[in-house]
Structure formats: structure tokens, C-alpha cells
Amino acid sequence: MKITEVSRQTGISTETLRYYDRIGLMPAIKRDQDGIRYYEQNDVEWISLVKALLEEGISQEILLEFVSLEKQHQPGKETVIEEMCTCLLQHKDHIDHLLDCLHEKIQNG
Image 1 (cartoon, one colour):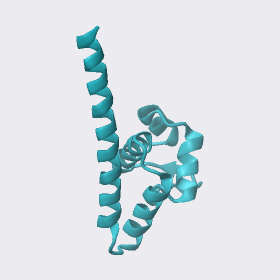
Image 2: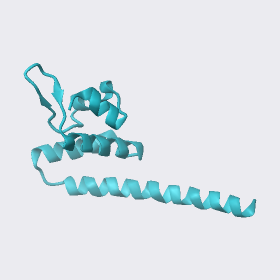
Image 3: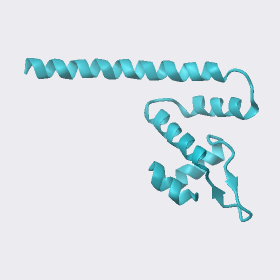
């Protein structure tokens, strides 16, 4: 699918998709003979995951490290995944605390 369709599906602007591709945050996106990007469904799934991880506080640097290890088939990606999981769990704990505070406000008026 073309970049405009990916943009519609993911809610990420075409400029941002090009930027992610340029900095190496994407797997190898296929291009046609004119250099136009062509996205597969698994690319769209990856883009959606990247968007969600970034929204939840995972840094671009950590994601770039993961993509680099994945592309080069090097060991260490499990460590990066664990780092992302730790970050997400900390974020979850913070959200759980905020929810508890809000529930307490409801109960106490």
C-alpha cells in the first residue's frame, strides 16, 4: 500500500513516516522502480507498534537500537525488549497510582 494509505490507517503523517524511514526506525521499506515506498501489512503493524511505544514513553533511541540489532541479526535485542518492558511497567505503575487517586477522590467526594 502507498504511504498515504498507511498514514490514514495509522494516524501518522506522511512526513513523519518518511522521517522514520530516513532515520532507520523502519524495517527495509520496499520501493518501486520510481522510488515510491510500498508498505506491506507487516510494515503497517510495525509502524502501529512504534507509534504506541513512542506514545507510552519508549524513546526513539531505544527503538533505533532494537531495529539495528534486528536488522543485523545480532544478539542483545532481548535486553532492549526487557528495557522497553521495564519502561512500560513503570508507566503502568504510575497510571495505576493515578487511577487509585482518582477513585479515592470519587469515594471521598
